[in-house]
Image (tube, rainbow, N blue to C red; front, top):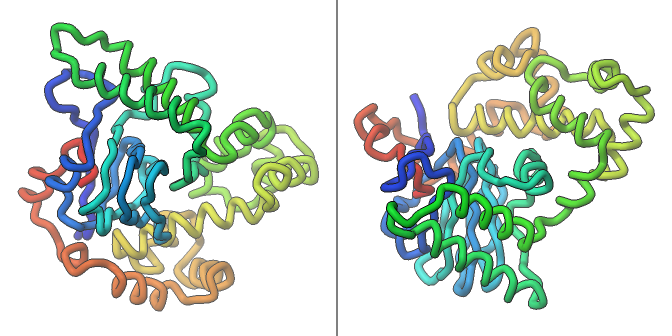
Amino acid sequence: MTVIRQMTYQPVGRGAAAVETMTFDRLRELNDGGTQRADFHVLAVVDAGDGSVMVDFLRHPLRERSAVWVAPGAVHRWDAIAGVAGHVVLFVPTAPVTPATRECVASPDLAAQWSIPDADWPFVDTARNHLVLEATAPPGDASTELPEILLSALIARLRPPDGASRSTHPVFRLFRSSVEAHFRGHHDAGYYARALGYAPRTLSRAVQQVTGRTAKAYIVDRIVLEAKRLLAHDRLTAAGCAGTLGFPDASNFSVFFRKATGMRPGAWQTLALELLPNRTRKARTSSSEADSSRATPG
């Protein structure tokens, strides 16, 4: 049973295009108010209006001249967007073409929402409009490279918070990638230190310099996030989470989760499900999933 809409990237009308754009007007037409999880990036630039987006259990405001970034795998829901104006950009992880923007996109710690400074807005606005123009060009006139190049320009102009420091710190960059690849099977910082060839103290110091957390705390936070996704949206039991996340048994996982969150897995799951819209608590039939699993965040 699944309680969220699983979306795969299937661009409309542009063959193998790696970037697609839409207005918030179009998003409103597609959005059913439910909770979603995509295998592609969702990047929004808000021109005006107020609303909110829930990303991995945290609510973020949508305000004039702000940006929203939902990474692949993050569970999200658009709320109260009737008066929001702007554009949404959908793209696959490999779409950016510059090393810096590819590194930024690869980060599992992307900021979900931030305000765009007034001094940056003219550049962001121009980059966004140029991307939209190229992404919506007639197929015969469209270059497959231009939208990807212009996406990279937009990401560079948006300046996601902490992106520069995280992408340029070599030790943290290696650690972050290793954790993302292995956190389901390896929970101790010592494993990553050995695998990367650093002393545990050196590794933890590097991680704390960039994130403000120890290496151990960073790993715990990543496991907890995945556990919350599994509990709330996949409705796994503690035993199911234990098996998926590399714990010996349900008891061991429950102790870990309670220590990290202050709640037992079952209690947290009950609370989380109560906060979800009614429509996301119901199982969707395979036919309705097939109808809704195109590359749209709504």
